[in-house]
Length: 331
Image 1 (cartoon, rainbow, N blue to C red):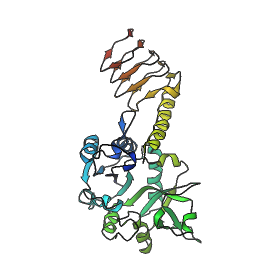
Image 2 (image 1 turned 180 degrees about the vertical axis):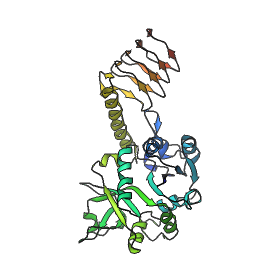
Image 3 (image 1 turned 30 degrees about the horizontal axis):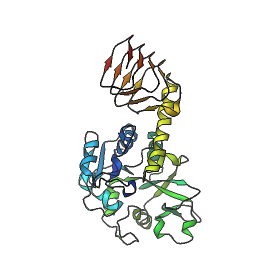
Image 4 (image 1 turned 30 degrees about the vertical axis):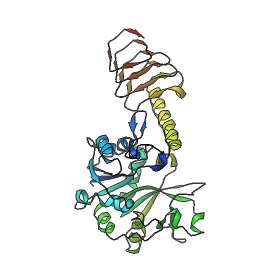
């Protein structure tokens, strides 16, 4: 089965409070990498046939970030999530297969979770499978409305449109979906902006699919952190901490010693060989490659460096340098 991906990345992110009105939310970096590229990192291992990124506010910035990894379409007039996905219609509508739809501001997504979503969708032969999670405080999230007897998914009700009883529901929409591709674009043309926001909600498709007896399922993730979206700089800092922890743990399990993981800032694209020791307060960014048996001293900043084996690096600032084996570099 062919797989496609639509990444919604057209929003400005007004709660980021930037003075630059042309900056897209998905362009904000964590450890030097834009949010949207973490999303692409998560979907690329899924053997997808095509990735389409929908850009809008700050579109040129976003386009330049993803153009080597994704096709780009424009949402020049933001009218909601349904309208955003509709912009991918010229690229995808005639193709057979499954389409994963997600947001470009979810940098904590994992390939494992998304693969499990695809497998559930295929195993149950669904027309649509959504990701949900259960939260103690669901305020602000769309609620998953289920039938009392069968427990099947009936609809997603956006928070502002919920009744009093629906506000008590704790199962919420994670904003991640797999659709039968042709049905996705067939039904997108039928949605209307009949809601409190006067927008075209992608979530309206759930109700429409159910009414037409198309099979809708839900993948309930036990890892709500992986679906975490970024709306402000507090959330950006939280996601950064989670990503740093993941990167540092992966490196340590591969044989790298990190003396103080809480103060190690290492980008996801950095490669480090075993028996290298990373001192406290070290930052390593870009496409740096560091060999085995090195010592990177405290307070060092390295970016886009290539370092061989068995070196001692005590550098406040080292950028775009190549260091051979068995050297001592101090500045």
